[in-house]
Image (cartoon, rainbow, N blue to C red; front, side):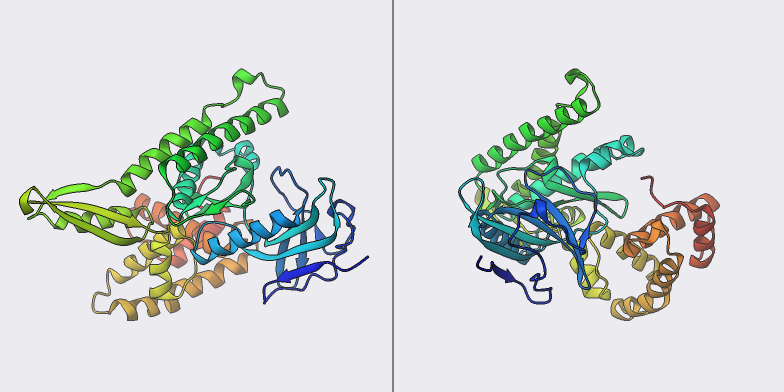
Length: 395
């Protein structure tokens, strides 16, 4: 049998040691790792290399190539999606009379599926966060011109992001990218999402031997409502008196506070020049992430970045004589890196993701300081955090 055609991005293994001549279900390979995963229509398995862990999904060669290209473009615009590594075209025909193939992506570390989230003891307190995060993901993708076509609970993974939950797109088989997504296509995506989410909740009820009446079939509608409210907040035009232009900056700050970049402002004079119509072009949800990276070089997700920036502001509060640049350098050397070293030294489940652990610690320090009515130094807060043996946020 002829060899497969592999297209692999640089910086990753060549994957030639995997048995591509067989179906993925037949692989018995020493590199295979048994890791948690969501429900998928296709076979997905994980493999460990020195450079990291990779997910291999078996699909048709045509679909694999499409998904690989879409994921690469999403990565270029910093969309919340998994990182594509390679695509494989095999020399044989699959059960659907299509050429067999596979797509290889980086394993999303510290992530979990919606079933794990729903079954967790802290889901009641996390429900609103989950719904907001799901809506936020759809809004961000649509702002970036991505029509998903198959948005569902099974096609995303969740991870803790500071005191919030973040969602990442892991399946882009049906996705398309266009310069601007029409309202009709956005509503079509929402309708598909509502139907798919209802089906997912019905499956969960069935797996627990519950009557369909006990399934949360309205979950998708709830997400859609949150989506529409957020979409209006980010994209609506605002009309202001011409002598109240400070409101332009207020609008930008509100959008930045949600984590989104403002790419362009559109200002139009109305009412004979007495009023201004403000329109905005909103980009990706990377505002805090970019700001933290520029100031300190620290890499974190956007919500983690927001909290770490607050810590930097706290550090600067009594050091007003320092420029922002010098303060950021000293904060990283005196606060961030020593604490990260202390966190890594613990070696327990709280610190599997050190940046998230740092955010957990910051939350603990805040609660401790608020309770005592004074600023608690890092060493004192860390000592108590270790003694308590609990993460900073309820999980």
